[in-house]
Image 1 (spheres, rainbow, N blue to C red):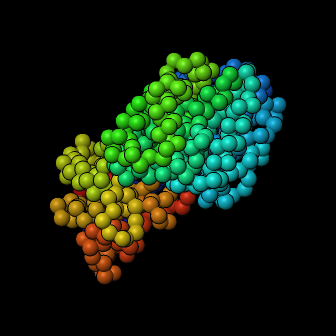
Image 2: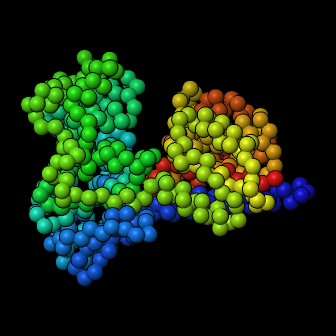
Image 3: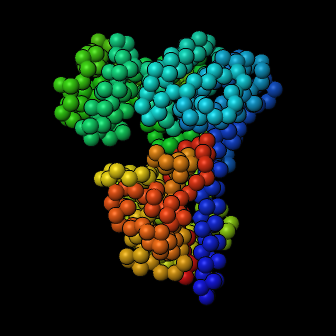
Length: 461
């Protein structure tokens, strides 16, 4: 193939990579996911327990009223679907949406719902007010009625409900201590669940004896329901004693606010009730349906790649760790790939990587992953025509207006021609500038959903 033909095919691969990524994003459309999960017949509401399966169990208890609560970055879209679907006899308003300030400010209000913009990733007073309204709605639901909870990513920060006398400032201070001592997300959630009125099954406790069902859009790899938004509607298997142990092992117990110390020690010593555990009677009337996830989006991306004529393989359905290490892994997969046909190959992945900040540049984990892949591919000789995309399904990567990056064999040439130094920019965590100079920023705009990240590597020749 001549140079002109190579250029045309390279442009085509870049377009295909974006089409495959967008198919994954579309599969996580929050409103569509809610519509797939709910079945309305007259004044009767039924819920598909596993809407992604060909055959699904159905929950339908003849509820007399439905009280919807939407929490998270996708809360508005999920609530809009519910407002359109629920019959007036069951839903006469009184719902609430708690989402991040940016999403709350965009678009129109949803009929029948109060809309509250709250802080993310740092909780704020508006989120505290939202949590109080959520508890009021769930608390007034009666036996024979349904509390329908719409959960999406970001719910943990958006819905802070510290148990009095713990203040929001004291809860934030405790979270900061956990971050500073290197606690992982599981450890952080364990502590936060034990100082919150809603996390760790707390919302299910507030709603009892009414029925409760959660429609969940997962941003957690592995889809652990107790981790998504810190599990407000599901049992908590952790304990007060474990929470104290985490703070002690991290060397920060002495600096924890006194109100937090008191609650945790009272819980450990049996003076206050534990978070609701598996088998608790309150969960006899609760249920949950996973209606969207990174795995579902990865499957949709795979289907699109096959439709476009690619031989497809899933390189990883749980890509994590440092973005640059993930680039090494994907490059190794590409270099060792042996197509089983004469078709071009699509290597796909899903997950959520991290970046250790060593510089003061601008970017995000997906942009850094894409830039690192381009540099490593050049260093290690990935031959042929290829295109690589890494993008966040929410349309935003780090503190930027890009979702990620899109690179190919000529990306570094374009970068150098524009006066950029890939090694220096990568070392400064300045992937945004590097990709901007090389025409590699992925900018689909806000997608209204969030199921972590997708990677698409297309190889030919």
